[in-house]
Image (cartoon, rainbow, N blue to C red; front, top):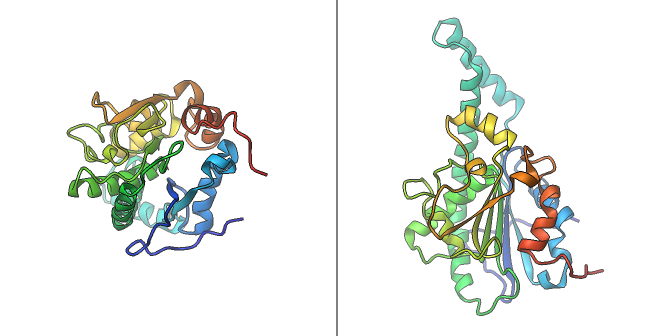
Length: 280
């Protein structure tokens, strides 16, 4: 049952002896706790992380924000472009409409990311107080546009101090982020430091990408004019990021059966729970 409750990101105190785990969804969710929970459950249903004793001290935190463009939004944007066409200002409006749609989603992601900074700042202080970690420790899982949201927050936090680590691992999955986002010239070059130095996908920041991801290859590229990190990988040789090529597993899938296809790999390579007993 979804028993999630809203917290005050400015003044929240993390309970001692617990490991915070953050989940950030991508496009197509309303700003409700049920919608945010559905993203978490899409993962938990297949990977079964929190059903094992090794993760009984891990707490779940969901980011809820509106990434669902309504029919009204679409009508307003299309009407504006049709007006331009009538006066001869534009040709085919579809790529431009898609670009406007995506820019609005990125704007919402940026706003949400900046809203998260106080929460992450408190979490960073809490993280430093954790003396010992069993298993993966605190982790963050972000998907698609959620990677842009979280990268925005991480970049802002790390600009204050590159010691502001918050998690033992950040799984940056099918990222709808510019392919150069984590490079020295990218908009989020500091963001990977939020999870420290990688040790495969179990520690540090890992970028999970598929070269044949259909949504990122077509819709994202048409909307932005550049490739996504979720297609190319992180494009850096620095040690702050671990590239996880899952092309052979997820193939063209971006979200429909994405976590179902990755369930075995996540269980075996990240959470190490393939041989653990499920709690009754």
